[in-house]
Image 1 (cartoon, helix red, strand yellow):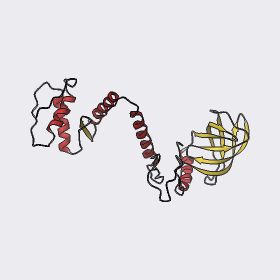
Image 2: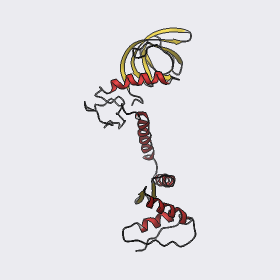
Image 3: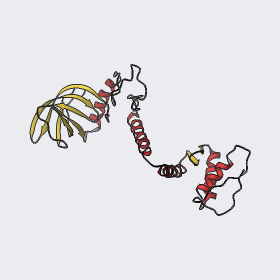
Image 4: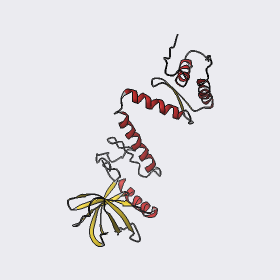
Length: 240
């Protein structure tokens, strides 16, 4: 699985390594780096200086890169310390050509001529023209990583993480209260008032009376208070 969308691209390149200028040819280009065919491949993790002679840049910039891996006849290198202007030019060039691809540039699987917003196979974001593309893509990658991580945890660990997340969300505009089976969710002023009262009375050692019609969430509210009270380690016993 590729970590950055890349396109086939052919161009000559000169790179400097150990005070020598070596020629090569670019075969793939992404915002993160390039693949260079060359008879002389620097070792992995070494730094090289590239003179990028590419048509979308008026003046060939000198860019530092770090060799990521070597293959037969070439090597992949990640850009290092690239300025914003050059990075923007490269992404504009790459993005314009990604829209015509019928395969996902991440997993390589076909997505059809009418490209969906997300790859149906790897779920990576494919809306390359979205101005917030990288932020949304990184969020999706992080979310997928979290789901994979949670899938490897034991049941008690999953419940412990869920409780921690709920406590964190209680301080946010979108608030969640309740156990893993039933949850109270709300953002309006009245629900925020309910969440505020739950937090307020949960730490007080006083009886709490909750009144309301059937189905309004009295038991859920009582459970939320119990989970935040000094008695949270004890059982919650509802009596109908």
